[in-house]
Amino acid sequence: MVVYGIYYSLPLIAAGALVGYLTSNWVFGAPFYILAAFCLYFFRDPERAVPPGPVAVAPADGKIVAVMPDSAGANRISIFLNIFDVHVNRTPIPGVVREVHYQEGKFHVASREACSEANEQNVITVEGDGSTVVFKQIAGLIARRIVCRKKAGDQVAPGERVGLIKFGSRVDVLLGPEWEIVVQQGMRVTAGSSILARRRDREQ
Image 1: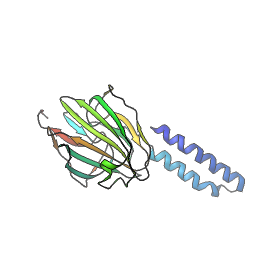
Image 2: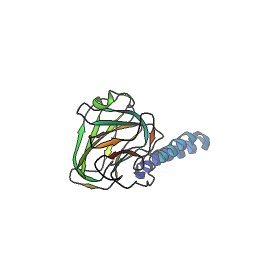
Image 3: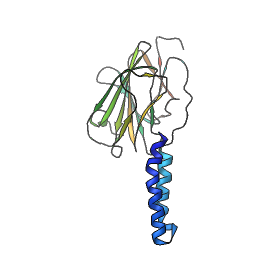
Image 4: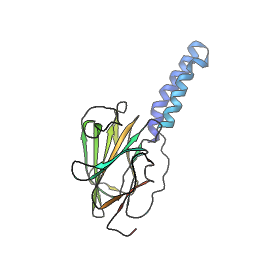
């Protein structure tokens, strides 16, 4: 995912160098260098230690803005990512990707409740160890580019990278009744490392 940072930063560095050359003053190119540095920072992709056991981990860094029943009877955990969070998304559980469904939609502010259904999103269904977990990469007001590198039939390890959402966004996780939620609204979580839920029917 770091390649995106290089992709965005190189033109900005070139623009800064050009402005500095044309004005004979590097200071005028400084804003471009600052933006280039931010792009490299934004698209960082640190390694994460994935906890063992029958757990569901956070698919994204950010703040939990909702923990509530879903319309389909599952429990929904919504995570809001600001522009300073790592935007690489990871699978909550190991297993097989059963479906990847892209849904067109609007671009409401990602922290709003309505965006869970109304916004553009990529819905990923993973089945493993007798459980099916759905998580959604949801675009926001600024984030209008969802990247998913997985397809139906792919095997995924716990906390494996699956893609990213560019520049501010939201990720929802839908968990069935076999999962005991262990997080609360307002908590901050880390993708691949923070435990969202534990299996009720498995020894810990």
